[in-house]
Amino acid sequence: MKIIVGYDMTDPAERALDTAIDYAERLKADLQVIASLVGGGKESVEEIHAFEKGLKSARMKASRKGVSCETHLLMRGKTPGEDLVAFAEEQSADLIVIGVKKRSKVGKLMFGSTAQYVILEGGCPVLAAK
Image (tube, rainbow, N blue to C red; front, side):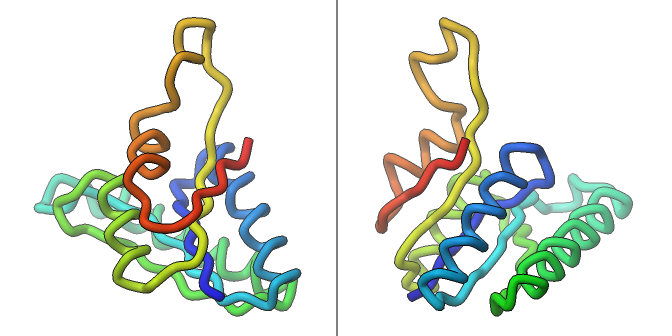
């Protein structure tokens, strides 16, 4: 089994990571943590280094639980949702885990654009961790 988790170092992403690690531990699954930046020279070196550091921290967190984990920083000119769905399809993922946050009354009518895209377009089950 292969679990993919989207990660951007926000609180919802940390909850998604914790959930994905728990599932990977229980199911003896491979875990892949991805972060997505648009690319094309739009990110600063500092931003790239911050994401690399965050991915290293995610890998260490999984390792402490005995979970095998690969990390990937994607900069392919896609939105984070598009990157996550495409990467999951390329890797034949069995589950995608994403973080979601609480929204206002109006915002409750829909998820954030990334979460909504992944839920609607993902080719495998999607678990939204809150």
